[in-house]
Length: 613
Image 1 (cartoon, rainbow, N blue to C red):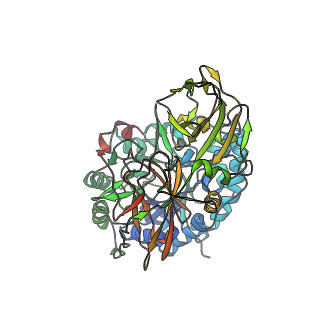
Image 2 (image 1 turned 60 degrees about the vertical axis):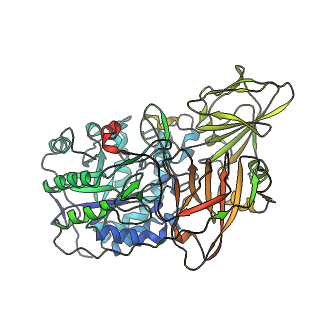
Image 3 (image 1 turned 120 degrees about the vertical axis):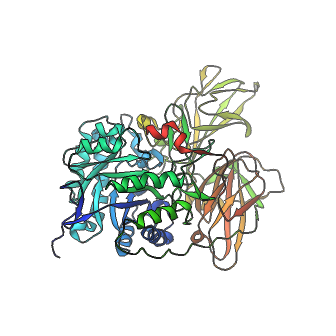
């Protein structure tokens, strides 16, 4: 192989293989896009005028249990990078170990929290040992795909936005050396917001910036920080994420292109975050806590009337072109020396007939499908439960049960993480969460079973609260100021194995009054080639949707996300099994739509925290 000179930063312009080069990047996460659609989404990225693909690498998905690694099928990172190379795209890899990405715990595996003394994102031995083991598996899979070795990877990011965390001055050097010692030889870079640039650098690594609007002289600040170095906006935020119970955020296409034009006119390289958001399927979503806890929605880029739910990306959740896409392509065309490719065709969609969910089974009956329950005098948080080969429980629900002999004030002492449905003898009594920490239980002197179904609504993915993300019951709860004891705990993480075991039980007709929470089952009949669609659940309250064993994510009537994306490749011709777990009230039917729907919207540029983050 002839000598190849990688991405260099010897002047105010990048060079690649000795020639001037401008990074025109877009972020698409392979783990958020069904694998059959990888090619379609990357072709649309290239057709827009972009030359570089950027992607995070989620540790929590690649090592879901300690020492158990997944790099195949949907998580085949090597295949994704090879595909980018085949299509003529360069790659900037962002392997973390922390990535944020609005993922549960910022992409860190929750089993790390089994260590009571864990200090995430530091040189604490328990953390660095785990990082080293993970990088021993990850980096050899990508090192041979670097530019100097004939591959498409032109740069690798060191951690992510560490300047906003900055708890250990030695940590970034540790991550840098962890990459170099395993054979990473391409350009290394960091990324931070303007304030984070002060603490987010490490010697020999290019600093880049994240922003949405050109405020506070951010670009000049970066230029002054690194004289005679090329400028890169590593994350140009096309929109913003959404949280349950609040309006959908949008950022106008005109505002976006105006900022991008100014950046490009100044010779700045860019990466659009997100170019295509995809979906945080299942329980993958994270949360924010900047004074109050807020769980993020599943959609990571859905269009409606030229807008996109969640990140408001140029390419919608289902791969459709938006107004942003077309304006962006027109802008980028003027910075190209060659004709852009033709636009690939849009995937067809279908509005299927409503499905009646004619069978149900209560949560209480489903407990026989759970792995062996665990008993303890005190409640045990999810991460410390002896399940999943002693890696604990990462996602979903945990049911805590104990016996009570009186009523009165049930107080969580703020130990519920994040939301608990309270039952007495299987009858609903109320909800405990961050806002409601006490409810009154009816008086009775007979023996009764108190049950708390506690949901992990998503671990915080950004900010100083990372070390405090244990879920379930994280301490005592009291009845009339006396701590409750002798709990039995059931792990309900709704894995494939659990759903498969659920099928073997005797389901009842929904004509009988269901005892909530409950699972409801029906069949979607698809004639001909399956197509993408969106599920909507009018009249339902809150729960989870599972299709052919695939967990699509949460539904919740508080919005703003009113539909769930169902990709065509996850359907088949003929019968398709639909299961909805419902906590409160079932309407009986599942409906479908051609496009996503959401509630009230708000302009992200008016949100103060978007400017500060």
